[in-house]
Structures are given as structure tokens and as C-alpha cells.
Image (cartoon, rainbow, N blue to C red; front, side, top):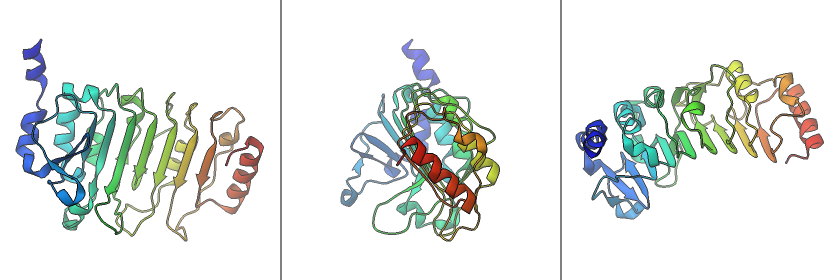
Length: 259
């Protein structure tokens, strides 16, 4: 059994090839793509965790193969917090781009049974400054790979091929606007598919869809206003709506007692 476990685990070799000197520990988080730095409480990586709880990929545009090696590893069975994004350190080399599509696609077909918190496309703030978002592609598969998921945060440009369902998702945050490195505004179909997804455990939803003033204004599908939708919802914010959709939303929130 031990031999089979080791034979299937390509992650340690992949991480060594990436460079352990380019990795650090911050508390219980394995930070891949951030070198040790005492100023930011990033400690040298002494040993590759056998049962990691938190794993953060901070060079995501360049780490698709490494992400795949990790999620294919038996070590992924214990991860509860996963980040696929960038950092201010990565931003020093902006010519490398912010397209994280392949890194996010590397999650397809995997199973992360303990994953509760997933963050896609965000930038780790090492010091005061702008967060730069990019593109992360289709996220439809993330709802299938993590049956225990309770928190999903999506940053930058993405697509959603159709409505999805997740029984345990409680917090959903989407943040698109920033200073110009994203793939542009989301399309209406993606926004509609997200709004029509079935999240019966959802309590908090924040959809920050565009810059201010917005380039695009979105409508809300009529089915969204069903009395049965998201019965536990207590906090809801959606910006960049058409005037009609904004009025409809406020009336619906007032009827439901949603803040």
C-alpha cells in the first residue's frame, strides 16, 4: 500500500523541479511561488507536507502542470483550503501575463473530498497596492470536484457554461473590476448561469461584476426571483445591473428580508 501511494505521488518531484527555494510556509499554508521572507512571515520550506491543509499556488499562470501534479496526488485528499492565483511578487514580472485558464482547468476530473474554501484568480497582498486580476476560464467543473465546498471566491474574468448546483456552498464572492488586466466584462450568459445556479445552503453572495462606472449592465433572469431560491440567503449584493433589474432586486430583497 505504501509503495502504491508513493508511486502515484508525482507532486514532490514536481515541486522540487519547480524549486523548493521558491516555496514557503505561512502558518499551515504551503505557499508555492513565494520565496521565504521574514518580513511577510514566510518561513523556509523544510519538508513537503504529507497531509497539507492549505495549499496556495501564487504563480498560477505558469503552474498548470504543478497544480495537476498536486490534485492528482494522494496529498490532495486532506486539503481544506486551495488558492490558485498570483501575488505582488509575481506582479514584478507582469510580462508573464495573468491567464490562469490552464491552472484552473487542471482541476477537472479530480476529487478534493475535504476542500471547503477555494479561491481562484486572486492576488496575495504582500504590501499596499493594487490587486491585479486576470482570466481563469470556465469554472463549471469546480462545483463537481469539491463535495464539501462551503466558500468560493472568484476574481477576474471567467465563464460558466450553464447553471450548476452545490448543496453546501454558503459563501459566494465574485470580483471582476480592477485596473485593466482582466479579460474584460463578463458576458450576460455567464452572469445568468451563475444567478440560476442552485445553492440551497447559500447565506452570503457578493457579485461585484464590473468597474465603476460599469462598461456593461446586466439583467437578472426572472427565475432568479423564485421564492424557493436560496432559502438561507441573508446577505446579497450585485452591482452593474440595469435600472430595471436593480429595482426588481431591491424589492425582492425587501420581501425576503435580505440585507
